[in-house]
Length: 92
Image (tube, rainbow, N blue to C red; front, side, top):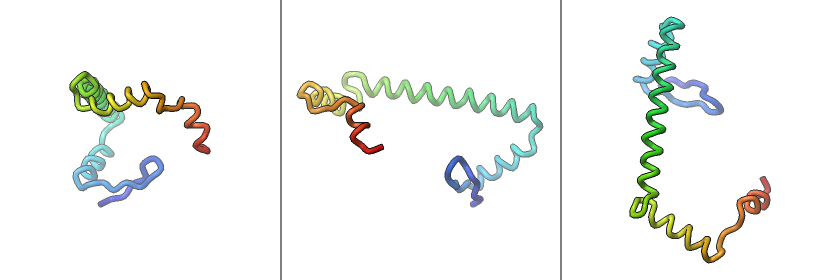
């Protein structure tokens, strides 16, 4: 497994990803631009799917129903703090 520097950490690549990166290195500038454009569109589609899943999960009866009920109960019973108080008291 090859290691590469990605952001702040070293990440191991699978053989398949290694092969893809080697192929990307051989692309012309216009081919790389085309690939990047496609990848950006692909990622947007993934985000849209994730947003739709969250929307479904937060609807009444969705997978997040129990968590939302608990949060609403805590708010109603004044068992919460304003975010700025939590941030300021965290020492960060």
